[in-house]
Amino acid sequence: MDRAGAQARIIQLAIFALAAGGWYFVTAAGGVSRLLLPSPGEVGTTLLRLIQTKSFWNSVGVTFSSILQAYVIAVVGGIVAGYLVTRSKTAMGVLEPVLAGLFTIPLTLLLPLFILFFGIGPASKIAYGATYAFFPVALNTIAAFGHFDERWLRAAQSMGASRWQTFRHILLPGAFPVLVTGLRIGFVICFASVLGGETIASAVGIGHNIALSAEQMEPGRLYAWIAFVTITAVTLNLLITSIENTIVRRDRK
Image 1 (cartoon, one colour):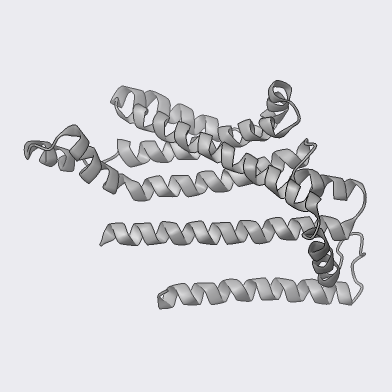
Image 2: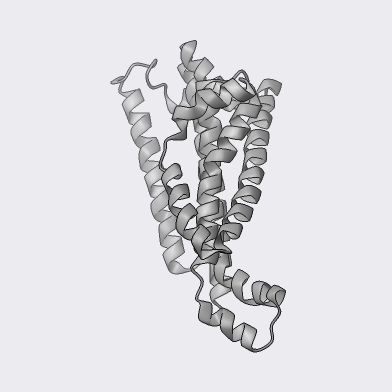
């Protein structure tokens, strides 16, 4: 890790430390009702108890299985659709603005339709997450392959490179950084949409447990689930960002 990266990590840790310290002092001073904000110690103790139960890991398994399935569908569909669009300038001119426009629609408004067609179980969350994550993957695929400098392609063709060789050695390496960014954004959206769908309407999963804890007025349990999601989301995002930066740096060498 370079000096800039180390400084960024220190600042990130300092932000989390300040947030945790502020949380502790606010609850210790008794300025906020425990029903609204339990103490960090209570939340930590509840989380430790939760992770020792079978139901906790069953819920985690359901949610992450849904996220994985939705993400795979979004990646395969988005890359294939995006690449096919770039094979025609007419298709790019027509479909790219349409996809960008559809992506601006809050798909949460359409969640009841997913539940109507696929039921209240994981299938509706998989379909919802896959649909939402499809758009950034497809749009970044179009940006990666559709706006490539054609001089490189013509140079490769003039030297006798086949279509596969041109794709493998020219097009794919040049498009890869933008493509990876789309995959990262798609994963973040998929993660958030599946959890959001579970929180709104679900019988199983992490989101269901968050909503159930709120309905039953169990703040310690509610914040324990939220803490688990926050830690997981931050860890995954840092990991994916690190992988993305490594790929981009390697591509520039």
